[in-house]
Length: 97
Image (cartoon, rainbow, N blue to C red):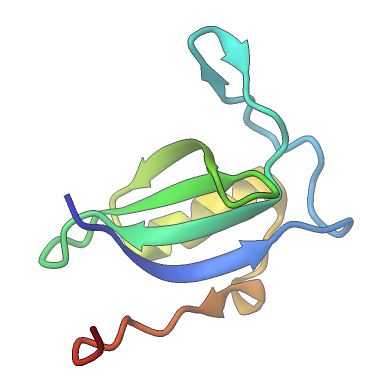
């Protein structure tokens, strides 16, 4: 499955730490993320994924949202991220190899 990154935000001291939701993987708590991305799951669908990234850019975990608007609301609820803080990611150049 090919995901396309749409938005990126680096978490900082202005964001809730810890977040309001404690994620776990295989029963272990996920550390506080360094950054979040919002990515398409399938280009023709509205559903998107929020990826939680460590300082190296590796995925810690992810969650799904039914729409981009829901993803922004979810991130605001969990970390206090404001919509204007998200950086839009340019789509990859389809002509470059």
